[in-house]
Length: 309
Ligand SMILES: NC(=O)c1ccc[n+]([C@@H]2O[C@H](COP(=O)([O-])OP(=O)(O)OC[C@H]3O[C@@H](n4cnc5c(N)ncnc54)[C@H](OP(=O)(O)O)[C@@H]3O)[C@@H](O)[C@H]2O)c1
View 1 (cartoon, rainbow, N blue to C red):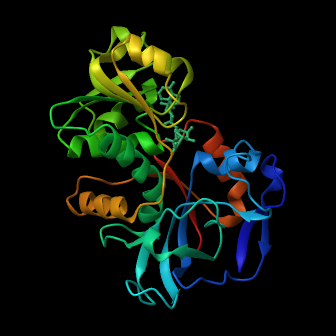
View 2 (cartoon, rainbow, N blue to C red; view 1 turned 135 degrees about the horizontal axis):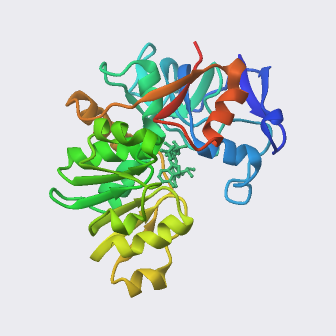
């Protein structure tokens, strides 16, 4: 089968399209014929070697941890799937990924995809969608009528976070550059904020929840946007406890874990027409370098998908 692997950490020149053996599945795995995979910033962060100590891979490794496709084999202990099922998954990140014709995934990390999603959309949803759900629902316990600030609302995690927070009844404020203000409104944001126009504290009234997708100065500045008792959930940088205390707020860091429970919740929102991923860029295994460069640009609207078969 075809797979894009890296044999060493480094720039896009390390992305190698090659022919390798199909994965051999374990008893609790399914084998998925990959129809679509999605690109996430973590893919190129792993490629560059930034996460080496956190996830020590035995190279070579196949990149990509978002997949939608068709089940072609089931392990002997798997009862919930059959050959031919259309599934999607954000599989465990320590195994070979989805930039390939086939991927082996633990059955309890996959879910039947909603018929309202095509394969590209189903591949675009798991990693960013699970992350957004974990931040908003599992950690921040978002409630109707709370005010939620979503940083980078035009990006992969942000555009799904806006929709999930709206589905939970929250008032959503989202940030993006001038070019993406209309898009934020289309995703459902009640207030679209142009971060290039004026300081955020001049544009945003206090919120209950901040979803921090940017870290650094944006995170520091956002403490001043939280109400007393509010929470900052970051997916890029552990919030500073002392700063949290001084603002009488809480901070939390989320690193995504596979979750079929949350995939089912996302399917439910899709079925209710409350959630739809935007895919602005399609690439293939052959154009993987362009796909990574697009993700690294930091300017992607919605998601980047690889069409595989
Ligand atoms: N911890 C975890 O489990 C986890 C999970 C998923 C992602 N992440 C991390 O979270 C980050 C975001 O991921 P992603 O997939 O959403 O990234 P992404 O799709 O590449 O984000 C791109 C978006 O960021 C926006 N942006 C850039 N600078 C901005 C700023 N100063 N203010 C507001 N918006 C800005 C851009 O909009 P404009 O062009 O309009 O500025 C663009 O739409 C990445 O660092 C990723 O690695 C962590």
